[in-house]
Image 1: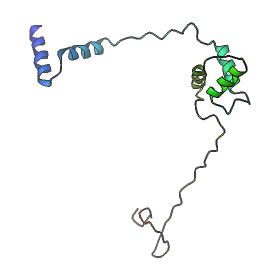
Image 2 (image 1 turned 180 degrees about the vertical axis):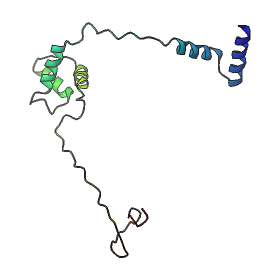
Image 3 (image 1 turned 45 degrees about the vertical axis):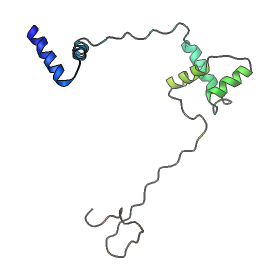
Image 4 (image 1 turned 90 degrees about the horizontal axis):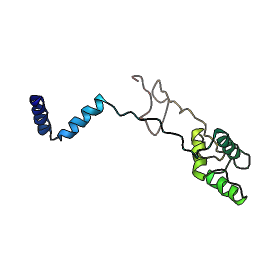
Length: 135
């Protein structure tokens, strides 16, 4: 046992690594920490409440607004569903956290391909992308 400890001490000293780091690494490999699943907080929204928040966020009058604006509008009307941050969490669970306004998507255009099979068939200001007989 002492010989093995001396070997570890010499090895750690030659590598300038503390012995505790070596022992900690060995312990973590042999016995990785087991984490229990996080318990649900007692004040978390129920699935019905989450669906109600989603319904409000998907309503035609709120569909193009950020959760902060929806939250403020609902408070002005005297209605409180949940915190603003909770609205973001509910949207994140549905993978809907993005710009909520209607945005035009640019179509994907194929780059024109220029191919010259002989001299003086194609003129361009940049010849680095022209395909020739060897490419």
